[in-house]
Image 1: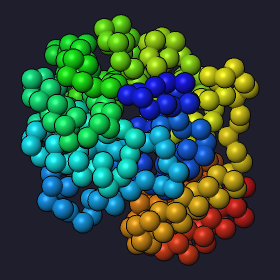
Image 2: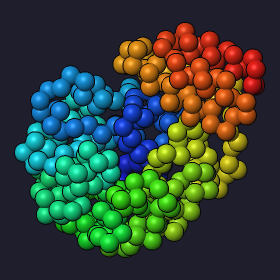
Image 3: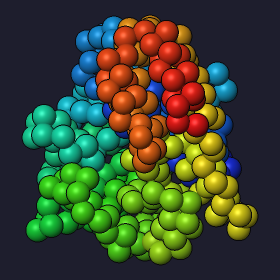
Length: 324
């Protein structure tokens, strides 16, 4: 059990916020498999301030989705304060998280996301502004090791975040320059944990059940955050949870059951955001669900053309008939 700013999290496994992936539908599936903390996709504080109609729905939590965090990004303190207040009001989230780790050039090069690691003083001002806007809701910060290997500053950065009032920090064990390449460096996450007194969430290279206890033991972190390892594999949470509890790690469900879960995810998504958008996004998600499945090429070719839920069901029937 971990406590972040008074919010109790029973299972030390968090779902990383990932744009275009961790929508309400996928978060629902991950919670069912044992995620202790979920987080919305990152949302632009500027878009919230300008009352962008496409942005607000991203903050909507599922029924009973608690504890959960809402994540915002930006680098203008005034806008971040206002955005924090809107995000908190709209989502009703237990925790507000600031993205200071996004490595995507259009985000980072404009000074948002991991760009804030190049200006720690500004990052502190942003955090203080979000804390004001959050109205008592705990505020956490997610960041990387630094901009590149020549400017790793995660330890000092974490100390500054703690001093400015962060309730916890999540550290991705790669630099901005690495993007998602190479191995995550857990040594730096351990150094952060040793340097601060607030909870630390370790993120990077949790791809199988045994990785969760391994990253927690190695870094001393309070929670493990699962990112790309759950693409098409929400069962990773159940496997990690079993490993943490010293239980036998469950096998992946049979393909037919995995397909049923995928279909349910897409139906949930359609109910939340409309069939058209849900089906466009289902193209990548369904391909992830079929990763490593022998002879799935024919169906992957059909998946990239999914346009309706009927297409999803027809393709699923074919997979069950030919591959299960």
